[in-house]
Image (cartoon, rainbow, N blue to C red):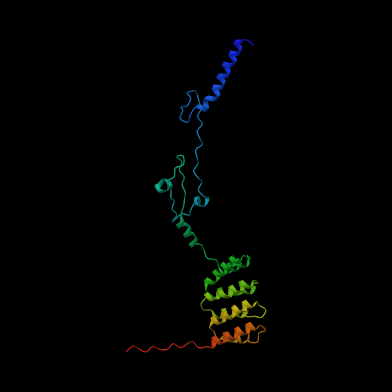
Amino acid sequence: MSRGTIILIVVLSVALGGLLILPRLKGPGSPAPSTNTVAVAAPRSQPPSAPSSLLRKMPSGNAQTTSITSNPALRTNRGNSLFTIETNAAAITNLLDDAPMKTLPELERDYASTTNRDTRLDAMMDIAEASTADSVKSLTRLFDLETDPDLKVDLLDSLLGIDGFKDEKLAMLTLGIRQGLPEDVRQSAIDGLIDLEDTRSIALLNSLLNDPDPEIRQSAQDAIEILQTPPAQIPKLRPAN
């Protein structure tokens, strides 16, 4: 190999090495090369999508649309793109308030169509809130069909929030003191007879004085004494001299 060839190879190697090292030596503040360079713009971040529940179109009337473009406090800039969120809590509240209440047969079907305890309790409470003779009859039908002792107790206890309708209540409580039912259910029915404050309850309680369950016998006796005890007389205060 001639001396000229060797010199040419060394020169080319140095030049190639310089081309490889030069970009690494340039700092972050170095000016961009003057060659024809195509700058690729970073993708512009997109605004977050609003939840579909907020973007749902509200019914007309009281519905109001809050636009970010009209409210500086809600204005959000994401790459010069504006997005609008429709919100209307008042419309939602009005919509729920205007929803028709379920009828007693519908609530009974809701109760019977599920085994979920919370759902049954909700239906039971809705029936009791009606506070009518028909609602007591509805609870009585559910009590007769219910097999869960705890829910039977809940059904009996729901009568406590209903004023009046002693005839309908008495029919349900009569079912509750029957033999063969769990003791907790029968005890709850006895408590209901006390709360009823009706002289007809005494006859039902007397029928329990010979019950095979000693706890039921004792509870019946206690309930009779409570119902037969006259209310305490409050002494009259003498007028001050």
